[in-house]
Image 1 (cartoon, protein in one colour):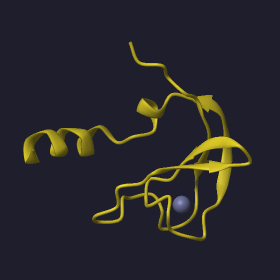
Image 2 (image 1 turned 120 degrees about the vertical axis):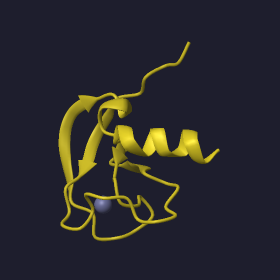
Image 3 (image 1 turned 30 degrees about the horizontal axis):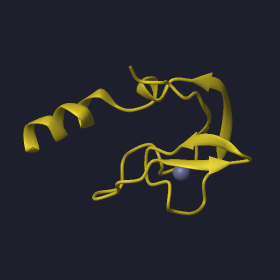
Image 4 (image 1 turned 60 degrees about the horizontal axis):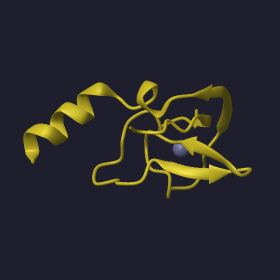
Length: 72
Ligand SMILES: [Zn+2]
C-alpha cells in the first residue's frame, strides 16, 4: 500500500512546464512542504504556487511514465 503524500506547491515558472532532458528530480521541499517542478527540482528560478495539496500522480505527465516503461 502506497501512502500518498500531498504536493502542496507546484512550480509555475516560465520554461518549467516541460521536463529537462535527463532530469531525475522533480520533488523538493519548500517551506517544509513537498513541492513539484516538472522541469527539474534541482534547477533554480522556481515560482512556487500553492496547490492546496494534491497527489503527485495528478501532477506527473502520464506520457513520461509510459515512456519510462517502454525504455526499461
Ligand atoms: Zn521549477
